[in-house]
Image (cartoon, rainbow, N blue to C red; front, side):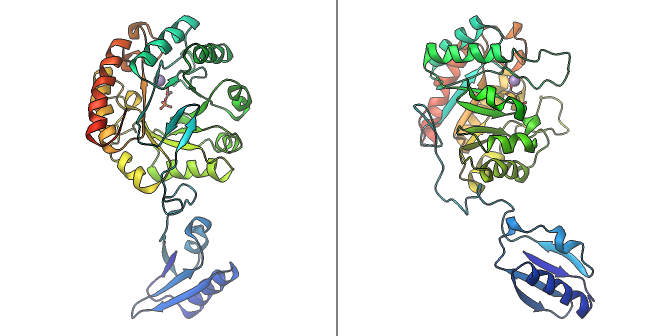
Length: 338
Ligand code: PEP
Ligand code: MN
């Protein structure tokens, strides 16, 4: 980190900053220019230092980070691409992994039927929400443990590993009894108690970008899980809130190649929540694979018109099967399998 002193900062103010750096255990590199002095901090990784420490001091204009504020999530820390294993499935390898299923688990029949259909089409992980983070308290909130039981039954029936959302640290133990991957939803990206609790589990965590979360905030949230002991994390772009209202969210395609640069963690794209419209799911899924996504999450429902949540963005099993065919060519064109 570099501390830039104000023009005309007094020798006492500069000395105070130097002493503060040394007090923290680091060395100083002073650069006295014509107009202003710059204090370089040597030996401190930026992720350990808070900018506030210096920005509140008299005579300081600003601080500049040289490195990212996260470490364990950074490509600078781990250069090799991380691969996560979920049963027989590897996420982060040559093969683009597709996770598919309904927004919500609605009944035993619904999840079993969907599980068989998505497996048949080539998906390798089954998704389904049992604890639903709904914008309205009057909307369907999920079947809870009953939904988790149906999901586990669908795994038994198809052999597909399952992913489901956990909304509270209090539910981690219960969800752990049923799921193969923990999903952290967009609304909980900065639920730090939940992230810390998931740092203690021995299963992959699928972390979604917050509705107004920056890429740096997403990676800082991943860092919470990693720094609490769980290195099995993947990050997901699911669209962000912008001024545009024609679609549910604005899918940030930039996030995919940028995250691939910044982090070694597998990067997932969710074109269903990213668009909110089933007609747009296919084109955006293709764009995400072309941009380098390691996996996709796609909502599929046997009867979208009757879905209890997110019907408008859900593909029918037939449309999903057709899309999977098309995605194979896109994956091949960018040197991936699917
Ligand atoms: C979901 O996956 O159904 C969901 C609620 O997603 P998000 O957290 O991205 O809104
Ligand atoms: Mn949904």
